Length: 216
Image (cartoon, rainbow, N blue to C red; front, side, top):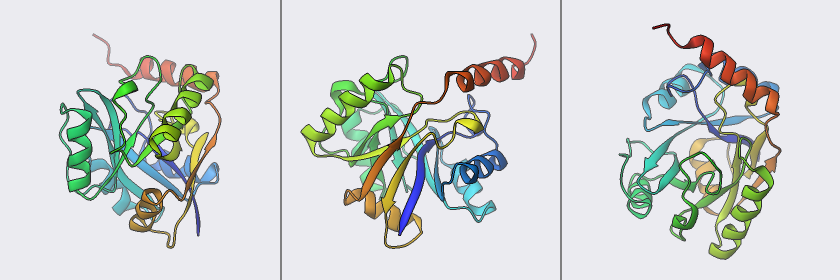
């Protein structure tokens, strides 16, 4: 069964995102996806709440701020604390039964792992649709995936509904459920696809965020 999933999306449970649960499902379907991973910053509650409130397939996850950079954990059932090293964070993700992904490891202006990506990760986000510079970050992530023999995935890192699905992962899973998707990624049955988010969407996101800020 082929699953097309954006594996890196933030909702309004992240303070810096504009994506409501309704927007999440609407734009995921519009882009032809049949699953999406909710990976809000350092919290898990929103992902499970959204999953209970929709029939659309939600992969619960979180983006963890390790002391070495950001790490996406998928299919975890407990909160993974922030502030630990990349190695310790990956170990905690595995103890929680999750999938550890090195997200946007070579992107500018974000918490990037760079040389801290190691073989204990399960996968590397080789395509991040909001990566700057895009081609260079993809190339370097692919080189690291080759060197460490890591599975390759893709996600948008979307914080604004229309950004969802510009990058996604095709996953060959035995079933259309979270456990089967996680197992397929662990087995390397996943293929990154996509392109950068158009700059106009990033500009619109920033303008909407400015309008949303309370006046002082």
